[in-house]
Length: 300
Image 1 (cartoon, one colour):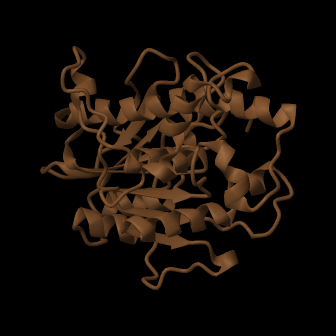
Image 2: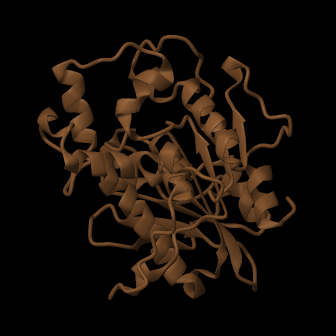
């Protein structure tokens, strides 16, 4: 199915259950929307927010409509939202614009917790690739609530109970990737322009400016991680060694290894799997097991 038609997919999950609310708007951009399946409960429920991948230039929330994990969460009393966000090639440009959309969606759902019967204190994010990195950026950032904002949505907390990341990157300061993956430094004009665009600039000349340093710091969720980070789960299944293409670079198991090493360094709680390079958590827990533990629930 081509990307332009993804929005035509009906929001029906693997058990044939339609989203309780479809294409709810959380902002002004056309892609600022989400679907939510409310778990059957009188009491407010925990929530898992799925954030899709696609390199911040593609993808859609419909990726998660057929998720097995969604069904497991709903059966266990956890509501599930799947969200869209603007792409990095749309104003105001760069990865940070996409991340901020996901942040605002999280805050919007919290602000409307009564409508969606959500327990604000039990909210998790998960995703693959770009959605994975976004989830970790939220999990490792200090609370981005703006208590003095005129917009009540932005006064809501951005802290997570836990986060999940599949085929993740270790940081969006892409200038650090060569060292993390173990590659020679690539300073070609093409590579520098690619990095500049990810930072939201239209020229490689901006990479070494003070403005770029601010963006790099904000995007570097690996460095943001500290002992107060939300507990997180990572699974990168790619083989190790020299990446042969962009997909292998973006999802290299060394990203998972860097996250695990940082977690050990700062004493953050993490379950990390990168089986192709020998990283297997002794707990044997999968994402659903991990999230339900953090929500203090049992699987049904």
